[in-house]
Image (cartoon, rainbow, N blue to C red; front, side, top):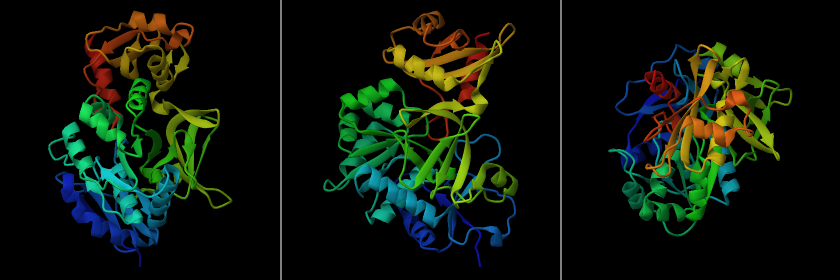
Length: 389
């Protein structure tokens, strides 16, 4: 008989190692888990008939980047193991992992799963008082020095480490540093390469057992295509079996084709360049300015490539009486003493972007606000522009 997933609080820092036996049992077909951050409210889910759950359900993990009502993706042991093995094959072989993200989120949880599958104990960054470069370097130094070594981070963490001499040196000691959760700025990628750090840009979500596209190419067990509406659709062995207690949402987002391949239609827009997936942003972030559609990701990419003063950028749309909406760019700068204006951005990007996509307003921030692991808080950024009047 199928069992309902058991809520399991996931501690921060090294204490999270206490839950490894529970996770091992879940992967082996024991009681499935519903992980959540220790100290937060116990998750509440809609009633569900246990008979409707997958027989090899291992975890029901939250969709950390979603807005509105949280959803729990149903991930089987087979999906999690397929993801872990494909990651090892793609990176060059099994290795020891350093956990630097919350284990209640899929990116952190997968570090633990990969460690279990590899048969190597993970090392954990002590983040109980927040993520710091010194905490990361201390944990990295405690890892086994022999064999391959990996970690997974969000761009904000990578930026902090690259800004710290010891942190950058510690990063360079890994065979691969997975980075995902949000777009990694071009300037950051160049700094990492100069420091000898091998960044691997990942794309995926809870619904695909974490990253399933590495540096624009799907994992060996994954598939990707872009539909007629430019939505990215992800398929393969790592796709979830729906959402816990959400049959209507599951039916709308997931499907199985005639060959038995499961697919998940994301809310992200994308296209292919030289056979590799390029993300353009979320469909619900599209800006309509003067009747023309502007995808924020395209503008962000252009700014990253053609305005070298910019470290990070997030583009949002704000209401305008003449244009309906206008493009607004919030940036952080490599040199806080420098200055970037909307006029300067338009001058740099004219001829590269259509006129409707040129920023009408610009705001320099000391840091990009985030929600969830590494995801920019576009609502907070929009409020910053609204306060400008």
